[in-house]
Each structure stands twice: as C-alpha cells, then as structure tokens.
Image (cartoon, rainbow, N blue to C red):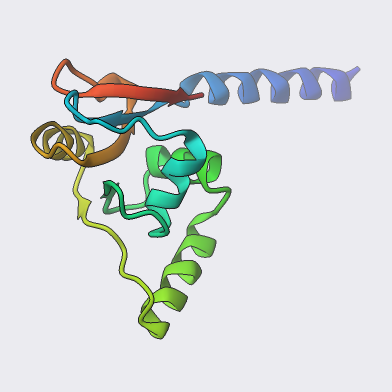
Length: 134
C-alpha cells in the first residue's frame, strides 16, 4: 500500500514538472522569405546551413535544453563536443549568442535573415512563429 502511494506521489510530481516546462517557439523575422523545416532549423543551429543567421541563448537554460534536445537530439555536453571539434578543425564557429529571450526576440525582429528560439511566453508581434515545441 505504501509503495502504491509513493508511486502515485512520484507520478503526480512528474506531471507537475511536465506542466511547469514551458513551450519553446522557433521564431523568424516577419519579412523572412524562407520558412525552414525542423530538420533545416537543426542544420542552421549546427552550422551546416548558412542560409539564415541563428541566434542562440548564451547560457544553458531550460529553453535552450528543450530546443536542442528536440531539434538536434543533442545534450549540452554533446553540443559542446560538437562545436569543439568544428572549432579545432577550423570548419566552423558557433553562432552569435545573446543573454535572454528578450534579446533573441529583439535581434530576430531587426534582422531579416535571423532565426531564434524562445520560451513561447516571450513571443510578441515583432516576430513570426515557425513552429512550437512542447
């Protein structure tokens, strides 16, 4: 009986954690001529596609973690290793990074070829949402 109650309590906490996790919106400038697919967005943020300028969050936040795990299937350590290899071989440099969601929205809103990701609560009319990740 106690084990059942603990299991139910654990499931309830897990449910609260899932509900607390915010959605992530991938955003572009409203005037953008390109609307990349999720796989194209992954290539942009991995430096393989230079058709748009990715705007990345500087620090590893829940929003950044959700974005990279959903779009590129990479964790923080995998992403650091990936970029270290590209930098070491001279094959690439990480994209510009900014401090927070508001800075991502501002940069994407002012640069026609910029693409970024933010907590969905940070989206406003100055940008266009391509798609939302749960």
